[in-house]
Image (cartoon, rainbow, N blue to C red; front, side, top):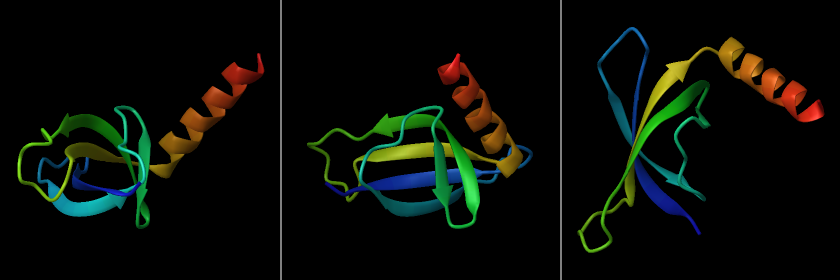
Length: 84
């Protein structure tokens, strides 16, 4: 089931947040990578909105932009750990 999320992103060096409402099939978890457009973000915090509140989204997700090299390094590490 698709769900709407209020997605906040920023650079590591910049504290200005960029906001968007995005649609996900599953709510992202802390530590996961989210690919949005040509940028990659690592989820830092997820705040779920109580169902009784009148809101168009079910959660607010805060994520920090990370370089692609960090993503590849993490994926390579996880692959090596699983293989051992």
